[in-house]
Image (cartoon, rainbow, N blue to C red):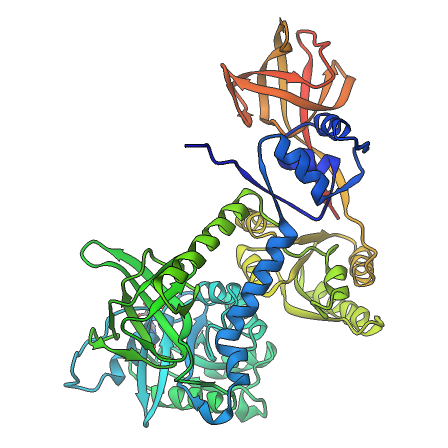
Length: 599
Ligand code: GDP
């Protein structure tokens, strides 16, 4: 069988240097190949996709256009959005019915989310009802005065964000839980940002009101401070004190949820082609894949062919949260579904297709697209790119998440940004999704990724986990220490005049201990990695004492024993040969460095 080529995603335009980085070759090598194809290009010159693809393919990779894939994804997203949102806007109003609201519970850890979910679940299962105990399947339905409410019972905003990141509106109403003895905390504010970014209205449950040190009035004051003024104080947030332990306030809470839901158009067409989202999925040794799907539009029936992400299959059997078998499930109904080829990711949207074959084709296409994406994270949205998005009409809003060092910096920066937003002529507005004190956390990155936002940090650091997630998701984090520089960048970005700045960063050093001159292969420096790591796609500078002998050299080969490797970590020995340099002397130091974007 022919070996599969590694797929490389290339942007529409790329400089020779960037292309070399992407394919792990030296710029010189790329330039040589370009010349062989009749193209003279300097190291910083941009070449187009077609030209870059020639070099990439010559070097044994398969080149795909990131732009084309992005367009495909856009299309795909548009199709997905259509499945239940746009579609029912096009549908005749008479085919729409109100569906039960879908509710998620958000809030700080230990403030009582799980207990509240459990208590609501238990309190509303009528005694003696068939099936009895509800299972945990990711969601359950309750009945309040003849109205149904669907609760997502995975608390915490991770699940919620995952859903939004995949383009699905996860919930219609959010209950923000705040413990009466603890008040508004960092995560409370974050959770609120998530709900607001998703345009999901919030009802507040003040929990643990039975506790001796409960202070409901104080919590209400804190809520007013974050813009959630209770309605009894003239605001428009319904705030309900509850005790999950004593079971008090629950009816009022459900009533508040229904009231809030009434203001929203929560509708669906039960006769449309069924679609919705995946809540949970697992593989059970006895039954195979069991996925909990939440139907948002249409009516899912046993025997339908479902596709969710890369999973597909015919619905063999369906169960509700009490384990009862179902033949069909209408809008806002969570169902356990048996029969999918693999467990879909939570948050993945699902649709139905005409037959198994078309489902399989779509699933395979998605698998290929994912494989291509895995090679290199695309920067989905950087500050430099935003103007292009504005110009193409894709966006008219710049969403920002702001993290600052001290409370005192917050307001001046927000005000300054709002001024910039007001000043620009093209009608582009700045929307601040969250503004808070503290380092940039993984949560901020998740929120940014779900909302297409950019993170601005002022005199703060970035947590390690946040770094990793940002790398993976392509979220742009910009750090500033000087306030006018921050304003300047944003103002420039809105005018499309912000240029990325790159700086060299040393990633590893190695000492040359032995020199091998090998006919044909050239000169190999037997080296010991002192610190950091050596990477094949880095640049190298050679130092003798304090003097730089040569720099900006590409790595021709990097070997451990006889094997070609991509990287070698500190404490290991390796063989290095460089392009255009063979004058090593024992004792030389090699510094490996990469070009990194800085603000
Ligand atoms: P979560 O992390 O937000 O899901 O919080 P949990 O539901 O796990 O609750 C955290 C702790 O608070 C547990 O020890 C609960 O027993 C306790 N708790 C939750 N609700 C109440 C309440 O209404 N009253 C009292 N006294 N304790 C509660």
